[in-house]
Length: 164
Image (tube, rainbow, N blue to C red; front, side):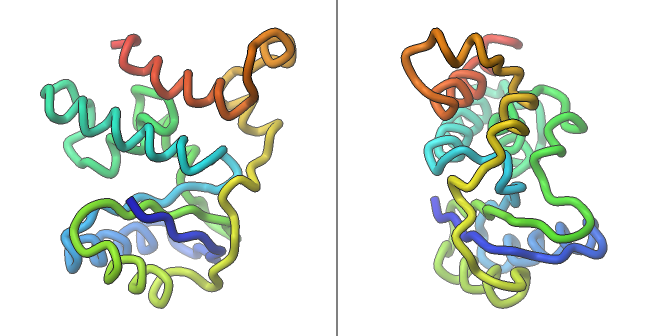
């Protein structure tokens, strides 16, 4: 798994996704873009890949597309429309783009040159209030658990398996 971070101004979300799809096809890689404000760590996305692959292997996947299945797990949601909040939107975006499988080096290079406006460190620079609201993590819960927000998000991602 490779993560490419940066910023991008998205004028048309469909055109942005289509370009990622072209790069994925050219490199035989799975590519999914995430709004960096929701991604708490590289472990967050690695766990989503692991659980999505397990669901696919077991024939328990919700989405036909592996990239979308990874998005569902990263979001901790079964509904694609709900999970899309973690994706890019029109306007300026700080993004983390996940690349897995295929020619990851070529895919990462293509993403950097053809998609991103600028490469910049975005991973781990999440919006705690936004993450807490999206994953339904309350301040009381944070105060009593032996962990941090990242641990609770990883738990939410893992719980998607149970919610079937």
